Structure formats: C-alpha cells, structure tokens
Picture (cartoon, rainbow, N blue to C red):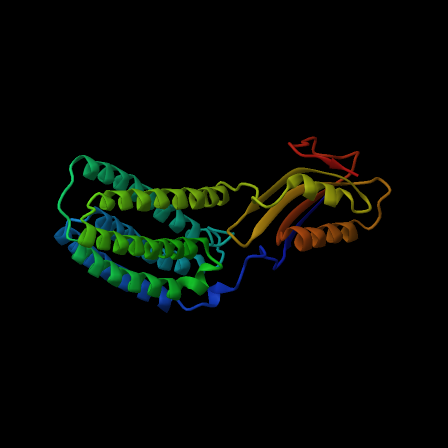
Length: 311
C-alpha cells in the first residue's frame, strides 16, 4: 500500500485574495458603529421609539461583530505550528459563529419588545426618529463601503458587511416610520417596523449560521457531490474504485480530501495514476489538500465506507 499527502495551492473558487486588504477599514468601521449605537440609544430613549432602539441594538451587535472580525482575522493569519497543524484559519469561523449567535438573541429580544409595544403603546417623537435615522443611514452606508472589498473573501467579514447593509435598510424604514408618526400620528408603525427588522435579522442570521456550522462540523461542501467526485475518479484509467472517502473544508477557501484508491491489478505507474487523480480533484473539485492511500484488490482496508464508485 502507498500513502501520500498532496498540499496543493488550490483554493475554493470564491477566494478573492482579501487577506492582502488592510484592516484599517475594519477598525474605522468598529469606531463609527460604536459611535452610532450610542447616538441611536440616546435618540431612541428620548423619542420613545422601539424601532430606533432595535436599530441601535442591531448596530451595537454589529460593532462588536466587527471587533471580533478584526481580532479573528489577525489570529487566522498565523501559520501552522506543532499545536495547530492546519493553522488558525478557522478563527474567523469562530468569530462568525459568535456574532451570528448574538444576533439571533437580539432578534428574539426585539420580537418580544415589539409585541409588548402592541399591547402597551407609548408616545413617540417622530421628528427625533427621523433625525437619528438619517445619521444612521450615513454611517451604515459608510461602513458598507469600508467592508465591501473584504466581504468577498471572508465569511466572518461578510457577516459583518451584511449586518451593516441590513442596518442601512432598517434605518431607511425607521426614517419612513418617523415621518408617518410625525405627520400622520401612526404610532402603531413603530412596533410593526420592529417586527420587520427582527424578522429579517433572524432570517439572515440563521442562513449564515447553517453555512458556518457546516464548515465547523467538517461537513461536505454544499456545492460538491460525493457521488460525482467518486465517479470522476473511478473513470481514470487504472483506477478500480474509490472508497473510505471524506471531503471537508478547512475554511471557506480550502478543501481537503481523504480517500482510499484501489488500482486494478494490471495497472502500471502508480504515481502517475495518483498524480492524475490529484490533478482532477484540484481542477474539477477545487480540492487543494489531498491524502490518498493506494490499495490493490488483494490488499484493501476492508472499510468501504458509505460511498463506493467502481470503474
């Protein structure tokens, strides 16, 4: 039997090289979002607006999320060592998990408060709502601009980016709500907006939490079919079957594979066959880290696993 590790430089095809992007933008985003949260809390308390407070809570979580994203990016750039042989790439995923979990808690709290406001309405100052929401819109869009380039290559930063994009939309809604309260005295619109903001927070967060959990649980990449992969490998001349197959993601951009490759008895050039398999996995399935164990029909591990593809 042969055993081989392939450490290629292939990445998942969504990598846009954002590790080279300066973190200065991320730091500025943290500062201005904390400042916005303070302003919105003050305005929400003074105006008596729950939707403005909802936006403030959302922004507070985003500011903390951005800080976590900054710290996680720093940690994730550390190279592999004797304690973490795959490196620290998953630090960003842990950061994303923390902020998404916190955001879900915020969403549930806002649902509770919105229902309470329907039951016990309170007076609201629409003018203050409009003034603070305009400030929020400017800061939210500024943060979105700062994070846009970094969000393309990092689930952690993308979570923060989407949060601020959502905040901008929520702030526009609060602005419209403030206008309706100021000119039409529609105080009921405040808890309605709070429900809408909370519902969107939960919908967005749960979706991203599923993606993050899949990677942390070493699940098979969502866009990859193990059956198709096994059939493609089995189609290479000299390969009899592929079993004991495991494919997982180290992070968003790095995939790994472990499998047992059974060669036909008459197959010649084991290394040549193995290299063709590696190239196929890299080019067609974006797998850059590959561990293949060579077996023969007369000498196999006996563990066929849940997936088997024969030539």
